[in-house]
Every structure is written in structure tokens, then in C-alpha cells.
Length: 260
View (tube, rainbow, N blue to C red):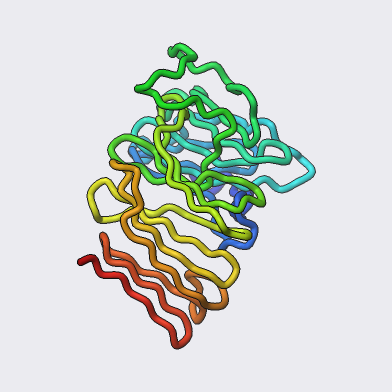
């Protein structure tokens, strides 16, 4: 991205791997929405105002191990930028004010305390704000009704946990958990059904889709299929969903779920 050919304002050198899943398909970290595009040079975040065609703000990415190539994932929603990034040898979420660049809060994997004091808020855990979630890190996110819903990251964990989060505080609002996995890789996706999300999972040669009502905090449907290869890669295993209708197929295998 440049203002002209001789004066570059951004050079893309951020890592393309998913920081929470080394085997996932690589993709350059870019966030967009609310009139901005968010990019990184590997050491800084740059928020670009699309209408004004300039950089609104730049902030350094902190708590990095500079012996490694850091990788990121960005989500933009409303007036906030949500970041998944390394915190030295673990992972963390950072949340920034999209207008000013101020860090609103951060949570790191395994953290035992609030890493940053919430700006303009009391450090309290009330019923309205949910459970104080020190150590809660989301590895993928979607947004429903002004709340954040994502997959709780646990290195080597045997569970898949969908968590609802208060975007103001990072506190936990709800969770849906299933155990019995060996090394699951999970992502949350938007659903066309009201107040619902879809979770897609690969655990070795086992594949799943969940359809979850985040309003009630209940799993509505769960579809499972065995196959080989990577979920979403051509010739391996594929998934499709539209509202409550779910489908998984692999070589000579197909499963569909149609609500009654």
C-alpha cells in the first residue's frame, strides 16, 4: 500500500500462518470493516481509513519473541479491533479502540490476572458482565447481537469450547463444551439462523459441524463424519451449511442433517 510509487507507507511482512493452528491454510492477516482495513508489517498494526486514504493510527505489537516470525489474525467489529497474536511462547487476544488506537484490554493464555486495566471501567465481575475470564483466549471469532463468540484456545486440549464474550471487558458470558477429542482444530463461523453460529471441527480423521443457539447457550444440531485429509481442501473433506441445514462429505461418503 502506497501513497505513490516512490513513498511507501506499508510493506507486508507479517506471517501468514494461523497462530493457533500451524497446519491450517495460510492466509495473510487482514481485517476489514467499519470503513477501515487493518494490516501488519510483522511488528506494528496499521489501521487504514479507506475513505480518507490514509493511516488512521499505528501501534506496535508488544510481548513478542523476536527470534520467531510472528503471525496474527484480525477481526473488526463496530468500533473495536480484535487481535489474535503471540505473547512470547503463548497466545493472547488484544482489543483496541478503532478510532484512537488505545488498547482496551488484553488476555493471554494461562494468565492469572487482568493484563491491562480496563480503560474507563471498574475491574468488577457482575452478573451483567459475566464471569471474569483471566486466561481466556479466542482463536477464531464471530459477532452476534453485539457480543463476541469464539473458540477457546487450549494447546493440547481434549475439548472443543465455544465461548461467548463481553467485548467491553473480555469476560465470559456463556459456553458450550464437548470433550473426548485428541487434538481438535476448531473454527466458529456465521450462521444464517437468528442468534446462531456454526462450529467446524477436525480431529484427526474425524470431522464435525455444530449448530449452536448462542441465545440459549445450547447445541441444536451436531453432524459427524470420518474421512481423510484436510477439512475444506479440494479432494479431501468438504462442509456446507445454510441456517440449520448441515452437510459433510468425503470420498464416497456423505452426511446431511435436515431439521424436522
